[in-house]
Length: 438
Image (cartoon, rainbow, N blue to C red; front, side):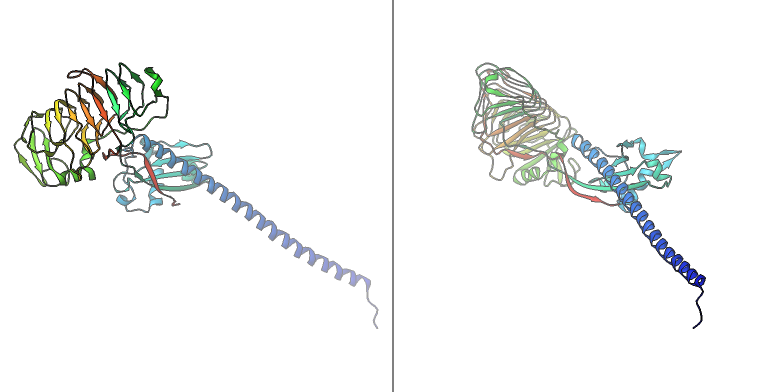
C-alpha cells in the first residue's frame, strides 16, 4: 500500500470547507435578498394603503360639500364625455398642467391631508352622480415627477339624493323664529310645532302636541322644550316641483293651468318643461282669474292646479274647490277660502310658494279631510279666524301665527298627521356604491 501524504488530505478538507462556505453564503444571500424584497413589498403595500385613505378623505370632503349644496360640482366633463376609463380620466384631469400650473386647481384646489395630498372631483353631465377622490403620496408633484415611492390612488363614489319630502310629524315646521299670538290654537294628535329658531307663545294660544325649538324661548316657555336638534328644510324650486310624481298625479286627476310671461296655458300632460308648448295650448284666463288674482272660482274648475313659472305674486281672494297653487312668488289667501275634501286620488299638496304665504280672514279648510301640505320658502303668516283641518305647514324663514291679519286672531289648525308630499329637489346625498378604481 502506498503511503498517503498528509498535506493532500489537508488540501481536500480545505476545498470541502470552501464549498460549504459558498453554499451557505449563497443561501444567506438568497434569504437576505428575499427579506429585502419582503420589506420592499411591505413598504409598498403600506404606502399604497395610505394613498387609498387619502383618496377616501377627498371623497368624504366632497360629500360634505354636497350635503350643504347639492348643485356643487367641479365644472369639468366626466369620463363618459371624454371616452376614458374612470381611473384614467381622474388621474388625467387632476395632473394636467398648462403653463406650469395644474388646470384643475382653479376650481378644485389641492387639499393637504398631512400624510398625502388629495383632490375631490364631481364631474358635470352624465357623470354628475359620481364623486372622485384622487389621492397622492407623498405629494402630487412627486407622483407627476415619477419619483420612487410616490403613488396615486382613485376612489369613486356613486351618489343619489333623497327627495325633498315634507310633512309628517308637525302641524308647523319653521326654519326661522316662530311666534304664536292671540287665541290661535293648534289641535289634533299631531298638532305640534317645531322651529329651528326661537319661539314666543303670546296671548292665550295653545299647542296640543307640544312645542320644540332649536333656538331660544322668550315667552310661554313652560310648554316649550329646547334647545333640540334642528330639522333640515331644503329650499324648494317650483320648477322641480313641476317634475315630481305628485305633480303628475295632480295633473292626471284635475285640470292643469300654467301662467307664463303673462299668458295662460292648459296642459294635457306633464312633459318636457313648463311653458314649452308641448302638450299644452294657449287659453284665456281660467274662470275666476283676473291676471294673477283669483277673485272667485265658485263652481268652476273645482279640481285644478295653477302653476306660475316665475316669481309671480298670487292673490286668492275667494276659493271654492280643490285648488293647488304653485308659484315662485308669494301667495296671499283670503278673506274667503272654502276648501272641500280632496279626491281620494288627489296628492296632498295645497300651496307651494317660492316666497311668503299669508292666510287670513275667514278662510275655512275644516272640510279638507285628506292631509295636505302648505310650503313657503319664505315666511308663513296665519291670521284672522281661519280654520284649517289636516294641513301641515312648513316655512323656511319663520312663522307668525294668530296675528290680526285680515281680522281677528282666533284661527285654528287641526292636524292628525299624514301630510307628506314630494317637492322635488335634493335632500341629503346618499352613497349608493363606493369603489377603489385604481
